[in-house]
Amino acid sequence: MSGNDLNGLRDANQKLDAGFAGIVSRIQVPRGAGRMVLLLVITFAFFAIMNPRVFLNPVNLQNIGVAAPEIGLIGLAMMLAMLTGGIDLSIVAIANVSAITVSSLYTAISVGAGAQTAESLSGLIILAGVVMGALLGAVNGVLISVVGITPILTTLGTMQLFNGLALVWTGGLTISGAPSALQMVGKATVIGIPVLFLILLIVAVLLAIVVDRTPIGRKIQLQGANPVAARYSGISARRTLMLTYIISGLLGGIAGLVFLSRNPSASADYGSSYVLLAIVIAVLGGTNPNGGFATVTGVVLATLTLQVVSSGFTALRLSAYEYAIAQGVLLIAVMVFDQLRFRRRRRASPGSSSETVAIATAKRGKDGTRP
Image (cartoon, rainbow, N blue to C red; front, side, top):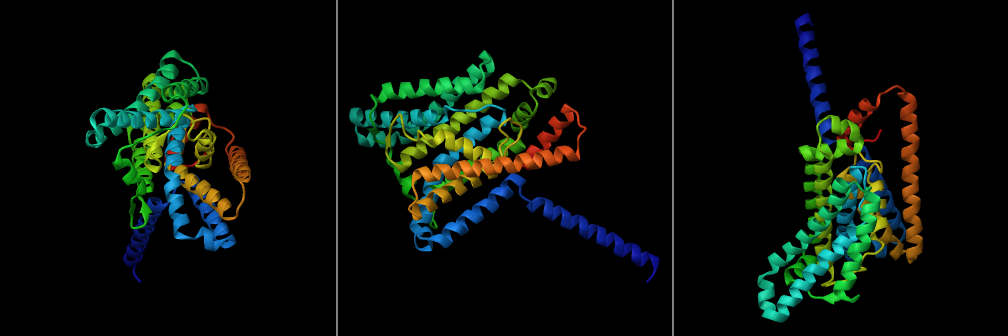
């Protein structure tokens, strides 16, 4: 074989390698998401083996798809706040106030102008619930970015404030009434998949595009990774945090609509245990509690994993207290695993400046990996 032939084969081989590497880089999943895929498969297989008759029943599987979206949306809102290094403890209260807004408007119009008029105004009533969520998120944004109160204290205070307002508004009672369109969405399926679950996936895709593909998403990541570097890069912390908490409130408003679509009633104390669960989901999904990186895919998978565990515990007739223990065990196991990996990587590369770490962290955040 001549030298030209060998060079031609070598070039063809290099092109083939480059093409294969490109394909692999396109299909690879973020590491946090990959971990959750493995955990989801293991938990699903475990409960399917332990009680296949109940767990693999189509009705049970559909219930998982119906129950996951409301906590998944709250988990995404929590993830976004944690991405900036903050937290949003008021997100469930925001969702409840949004649901109460929609239910109250629908009922008031039905009583005053008739049910037909209320149905004809369903779009505006639903929009009012979403706008309410964004406005309450803006309240958090002002207190955090303009006044300068720390996120945990701000959202702890607004959680109490919004809960109190909801209690005064409803008189502590559960109020009924919601547009029929919401109820139809709550019951509808597409080829066996609940529409509510499809809504969660659509919202997750849109949020992933915002976080990974837009300037504001990159500003949110850098703000969480290194606020000092973000300031010297010309990023306005005030504007970034304001937008972050408005989007978080918007997600809370959508979660409130999902509450109503599952059950056409609203109350101030619905989902009182969801705040802790949302934090668990965000951290399990790969969100750094100190800010800087998170994966939307990981949060969705973590939501499904915990919902599978909840459904599996019900199939095995285990109690809610044991489910709470399982949540804690999963969370601690993942944090221990992450901490051990972080220490191993730090020993491997001991010398790096804070600026380098910030930039690298931001880049890794987009890939869903952790330092």
